[in-house]
Length: 312
Image (cartoon, rainbow, N blue to C red; front, side):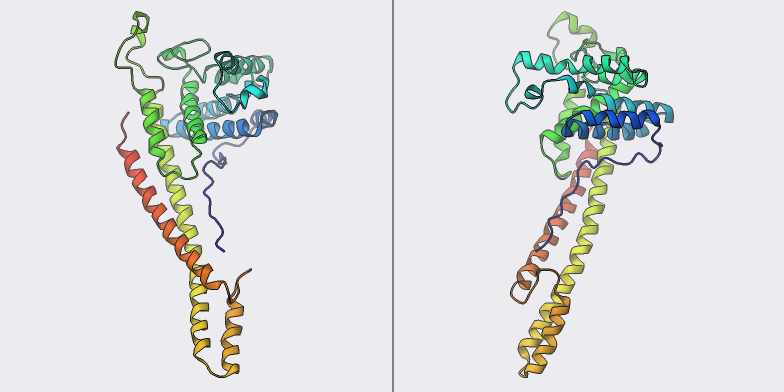
């Protein structure tokens, strides 16, 4: 049968432009104290942060700094009770307040460690919003460090992708549209104290536009990977078509010797678990798989067109 191809949506990419120094290796070891899902999330956010910074044209030292802050942004979750962190249902108001404390817990942990003190802002500010609606301190605008503004966008995006269980970039534009709403200022001023931040959304628009470019890169990578897989499928399909042709010739022959000639040819071409009885089903599976992957590629190209038209 055909092996089910699954695109690894967020395999942590090797940050090849920057050698992992001692501090970063120390950080990565520290992430082992986190649960598996939070650790993967931290790696994803660091990956996204690094690549967004590159599109922003940030200097190398700042990119490395922001990336390291991103690795640590959720480190405070090691202090959150697991029954709250992994609760299936909706959190109570009290439980949500406990979850929010991970920002302060992470900040305090970093500040107490000489190796991590420099990167404490990633933990403290990554849930702050430009319009002042975030936590833990409800700061706004330029009060939020630039690195944390970048991490915030990467964090929200990866959280949405994880929650929606994407296995491909098809329909990823719907998540980006939700982020555009986060970047859009509210249409109405509800209170006078909101007036100073009324022209701001929750997230940095410039950073969000760079995230779009990163997502397009990832979508193009998925297209490339899928095309490579289709090439493999077509090779296997050619082999099975050859088996089918041998079978046709075998059925035309009357002498046993001639039949055995084609049977031996078929045996040579059979892959693992393939035989005279099931090869036609396998052949049909490959044809269907190719059609599905070609449709996927087409949909991914359409998705890129949608993303390029998005405005924030």
